[in-house]
Amino acid sequence: MVDQPRVRRRLTTPGTGPALPTVADGVAYLGDADGHVCAIDIVTGGLLWQSRHELRHGDGSAARSSVAALPAVSADLVLAEAGEQVFAHDRRTGQVRWSIPEISSHHATIVGGAVVVLHDLAAVAAYELSTGAKRWSSLEAVGGVDSHYGFGLLAAFAAVADGRLFLTEGFEGNHTHGGLHAFDVDSGALLWGFHETFVGCEHPGCEGDQLDVAPYHPVYARGLVWVVRDRWCDGDGTAALTLVGFDPQTGDEQVTLEEPAEMGLGGCFGAAPVFGTESIYCTSGDAVHAFEPGSGRLRWSRRFPAPVVATPLLAGQTLHLATEGGQVHAVDAATGEPRWDLALDEPTSWLPTVLGEYDEVPSPLSLTDGVLYAVTDEAVLALG
Image 1 (tube, rainbow, N blue to C red):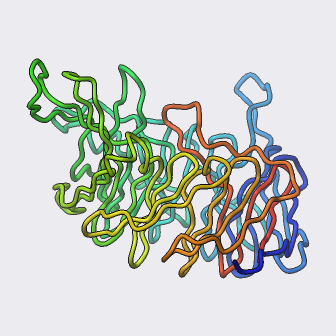
Image 2 (image 1 turned 45 degrees about the vertical axis):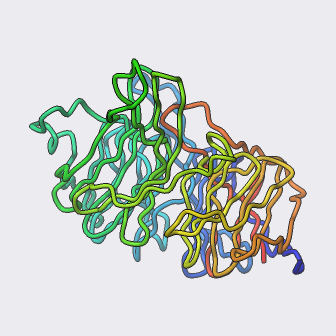
């Protein structure tokens, strides 16, 4: 085991409840639960600028103004979600240049000269990065699509590749049962997609197995779009999880990797996968597993003292992950052997599950230029 990292810098905001930062060119851009958006020098910890959002409802009462994690950063702008509304701040001064008027706008992603956001659960839309002018909305683009009954989009960042946006859905009983959709970046047109689907089943009395995409963000890797999918047989009440890779151009299924039978349902695929050069990494419960990409053969497994929180981060040959209770771990990506373990001397509220059907467990970790950032209840810690 190599030496564990130390806390290089403790970054704090003027308010309470800091969020995970986006770090670019030596500056951390982050917000907090009191509506502040800040730029902080990661070397000195000095506050370069701050802007505060104090939003109000139409009747004048205070609205939720907390700033979400991981703002989108361009050469000139910092796009932060505050109180379910996206604001574009001047990256040098913090001044608000423009905002998206639609409420419930979230998870901004910069794609070329546009910023793509989700609107509530029902739509994805694109705006000019320089001015905030709307380019398109999927509410308009899918109006004439046959058999389309709307979205229940997962509140997560889109995967972007080959001029396409890929989004998954949440899972709510009697409403949204999971799906995967591909949109054209330039027009918002729905290129392909599906909600829950049904396939034939060999069990007596079963009218067909139900296929649902699990509520984890999609991953683009190895030329395919990957999701975790559940197959439910109503005939015998059994279920199985698989990792499935789809052709990004057509939506055709290309690769299916099954969970090892000895691990039981949900024993491997409990979050979105992470792809390395030689392995696919998946977590479930208190364990992380490495699989051979072609065959799906299990290479190694590593258990931890507490449940893993969100999807791990891979940097070179090191896999970084957080566990409930404020522990940060690093394991060798090739062997699964521990590299270091660190118990943060800070209060944390990291949880391995979420209550909302359209939410994904947020990661408490980010990684930039070899520095690992961990968000606690009181500060962001730069580890290295």
